[in-house]
Amino acid sequence: MRFCRFGDGRLGVVEGTTLRDVTAALDVLPAYRYPLPSHDPFIANLAQVTARAKLLLASAPAVPAASVPLLSPVANPGKLIAAPVNYQKHLEEVKSDKEINAGNPAHSITIHSAGLFLKANSSLVGPGEGVAVRKPDRRTDHEVELAFVIGREARNVSKRDALSYIAGYTIGLDITIRGSEDRSFRKSPDSYSVLGPWLVTADEIPDPGGLDLQVAVNGTQRQKSNTRYLILGVPELVELASSFYTLYPGDVIFTGTPEGVSPIQPGDEIVASIDRIGSMTVAVRTAEGADAALTGAAATART
Image (cartoon, rainbow, N blue to C red; front, side):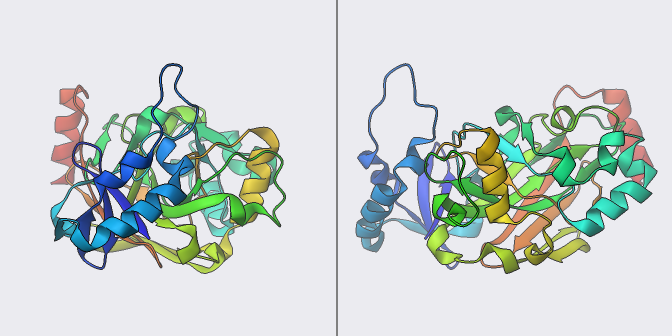
């Protein structure tokens, strides 16, 4: 099933090019009082929501999916976890390109040494919300990634059992400011973690290790690869992450980006696609409050 979020927290099921509003399926979720749970209630109760949504589909209001601005398919992840330099060719381009590595020694080591990092939850948006460039005077890059959502509490999970802990898959854009600061700082401004266009439940992708992924900017292809080239695949990432953190339903793991990362600027349009998930179109704009003089200079440079 393909679940999406839109409007004022409404829930949809996408079938082909049609979105069906099944918000009433959320009525099966438990009611909570403070303190709120440390997980995403929709993901924690996905089986119940799915069963209810199936009953609603036949009579659910329908609209063209392309006509509705989409939110992140996960509303309340406890953590956004990301894998750095997890494709060999991307590691090589980072090492060789000074504009990408910015002299940061952390970029010269493998994921086995670097481990994982966290992104601020406040950076999370859906494709319909777009990317707002926070520092227009600095290089800001797109990074397309397969992302997956944890479906149940996980600690010290073996890679053999890892896939059974996944609720579903989605497309991730890890937007990145280049510089010498820590990764989590440069990758956590508002709107710098894009998820969408929907969550494809895990039963529809039994093997996440062979998916084509690509990204185009203004119609020009920038990145193209396949998840078979991940250094640490999805099972290994679950094993690694759960050996350090307790993973909760709704936690999101970005698996890393392939080679071909390149700059984006306000006015650009990003189209990110992953096999068996779909495509999402994301507009790039200037963040509210960004330095007006710098924004003007960047716009002049584009022309």
